Image (cartoon, rainbow, N blue to C red):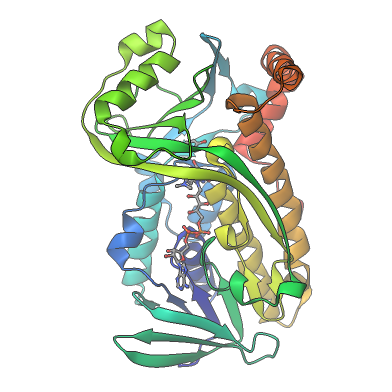
Length: 391
Ligand code: RFL
Ligand code: PHB
């Protein structure tokens, strides 16, 4: 098979890129190791920045998101038992975010791909990338014990943190920057009405908690937990009890509990690989960087990478190589700001087992400043809704 662009991975990055390229008349195939069902049922992100919403509109997949997504103009911080609203809309000159589950977004993108008759090869095994230092890169994979080869102009590595693309780059050509956190997030999804109309980020001596949602009837909650915890140790009852303990009495009182639909533990990590381009191989999304979910930036960064990448590839086919030459630098400027913000939110709101008492006091003072100064709240708000593009 020969295509212009071979995309590895059918997560949000790969699917959005596929849609944007299709709109521009560029021929692309997606190669994904898992089944459509598996990809559709990974419960992950919930908050989209305006730039991600705009991109999904540009890709022609925004209709259901606008009909069913929830526009949020603020969120609450619950610190030392006191709830304080961060007025995103007021602090940023009218910006807001969209609460719409990654599963729904993935479904919309898959449906659009299917109805346009675009090829996605699911359940591909032994995927490998070759010759990306030439202008004839290749992708090999097996399906049903038969080996296949795709010849292309470019490979887009949208295959997530554990993917094959970043791992195929020569070690001496790439630098990795990483920080791992000594805790995870235990997430629970339930068909119960959300405890509040807006998200609540909770800092508590027992650990961080987050009250989020997917709709008016479906809630998503998270608890900071030790990395050694196993999901099986957390009955639904234990989860709800612990969440109530981390909330203020009034919020705890209004919490509606019910059986979980899903429960999982995710470790927290900050990671950036540099650069993002290796000849004709480009990394995008979680393949290139990971943020702890505290700032709700992972999916949004994946969207902003593929915005740059789609534009770069479209420009290339009109004879201009500036976009592909500057892809890495443009993405990294935005990535590092989101990395900094996600790290900062994580430091401020979580309980670190080994923080010394001075650092602890300094963090508390910083949080006090952020919440009680307009400048502090504005910094938080403008990063949360998403920084503007610099191009
Ligand atoms: P994905 O979604 O991991 O997709 C990569 C795809 O590549 C496939 N793959 C391969 N395919 C072929 N060959 C191989 N060798 C392959 N190896 C892997 C995989 O099967 C998969 O289908 O990466 P992508 O597209 O870059 O998207 C990134 C986002 O999924 C991720 O950043 C977000 O979910 C992060 N995130 C959040 N982001 C937000 O913007 N807002 C949020 O509110 C938010 N909340 C979250 C989150 C992530 C979480 N977890 C579970 C880490 C909450 C949580 C709990
Ligand atoms: C979610 O709803 O899954 C969610 C929301 C906000 C975050 C992280 C996760 O910061």
